[in-house]
Length: 483
Image (cartoon, rainbow, N blue to C red; front, side):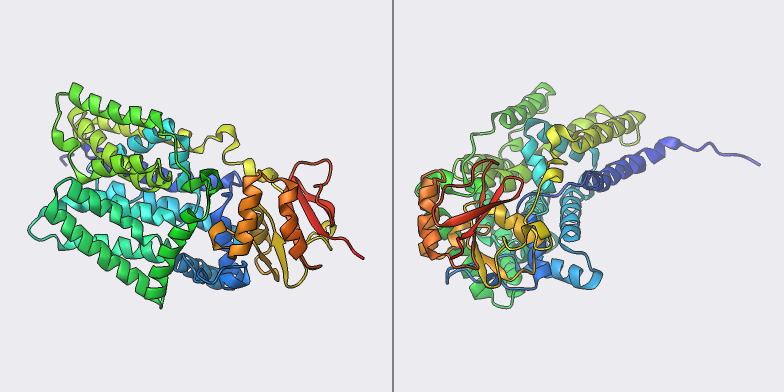
């Protein structure tokens, strides 16, 4: 019998790919194992699905903003809740894990060296922790980020003689993003970047695919015209009803330029030049121009940087690393395996280490909960309204009481409030939460309403006409004094 020697080097590509994919799947599981929960919109999305109620039964809304801006995501969460039974916390866990994996597992299927994707994410996580941490927020904007990633990978195929596969893929992801996330109008940015790069044919085909995807996504809502219109109205309301930028929600405020990440970007360009591989096409393309445009628009709102430039930069850097790795090691070389395992291990540690309590800071949080006997009588009564100047009061309280029979004056976006209440809220913001500014709300309150404030323990808020109870850590609940 003649025995043949097995060439183990043939297993190198398989082991490298499996290491990358396995790490990307296990990282969110490890993060969730700490007890991590996001602190904002993921909570209200889960609560919305469990509540089974439309937004106008949850929030006090202005007439122009009564349609759901994220119908697709709430439909998905509602389906999971009704058919598998998880409550709000289970749905948040599902959101964090599924969206992280959804975004991170796309590039390995487009790269010849999937380990280059880990290298790209690792660099970005070291330059700006918040860039990659946003992938753990469990919010549907991650689907739009994934659509950007797809667009950045397949756009060269739009220049081929038969670009139909690329067009279909772009259309599908755009439709999903529009249906799930809602901010369909922002896809105008990558289309514009095609024309800035003078990629006329690719830009035209990308535009057709994106527009078709938006229309399909809007049609899935059942009322495409109202859906498209309200999202535009929401944008103008969000940016047009505050005289100071600090009054905007955090992600709509401008950033400071993110200098360290820019240094990493130019470092990659310098590395390419040092390798003797300089080519102007490295920067003269729609992907790099999208990075630059997103960075520039970050001085208007940081979400342009986080949600559009960041995924484009991740793809661009991954392609740069891939070119370098292919010159450093062969496809089946042991050097490649060593590099892949090293990157996987370092990326695992960088993502799962609980730096500054980033994955455990919510463990000490206390909530207002209708089931807590210590808070009995201090939560809103049937038909009541929760008045507050802090959106986290809405996120946390709605998360813990999704079926409660009360509404919130301030939800996930101040511009959705009735104009009179928005004016009161802006006055409170203008005066940095001065107690006197709450007077108009107090005068509107009924016995079933409550004013809930985040203030430190000590003296109760000095707001006349209310009696106060320190209901949870950092939370005061005020109600009208009983006659």
